[in-house]
Image 1: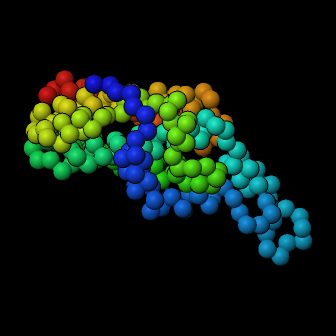
Image 2: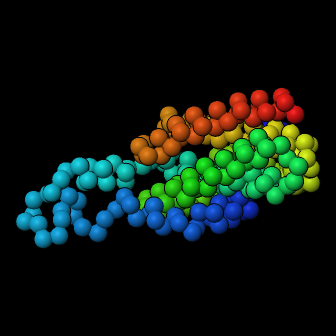
Image 3: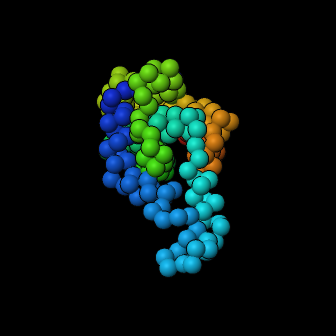
Length: 213
């Protein structure tokens, strides 16, 4: 069931639709319109060194950070899409709908956060075509997989969702671990660690749920 696909136009469109509303709020945070550490009307002496240091650190990034965000945005967007498919269905076991709700609630804001970073770094919110062709996203579902999930009902749908999402989460964990090793931006590296921790726990939760169906 585990798939490996390059970035698709549909995934990018979904990601940007989810992130577009509030991405700008994050985008402005790393940069300011005044000199670091200076307050209006000051005599020229920095009021505090800490804000300047924090701003400088948040602005530092490398290619691994940018690629992590560019690839994880559509990856997260598909997880949200899969969760929304499940939440529209009837007769789904409550633990499965609860999990779908949790995934949607967690990954939507992370899309917004990563979109804001890319915009603040002056980077495109999707990977350039030449780079995306060389970097695949592990765990992504194909159109046929999503169509099967749409068509499934009841317990069959629950089982399919859990099976697909386990593979999807495994792909996200793989991508996040790469960022943990190769990334430079402190916020991005921390998010990658958070993704590994949260999604490895959810993988085990889904395996346990699958065994009960």
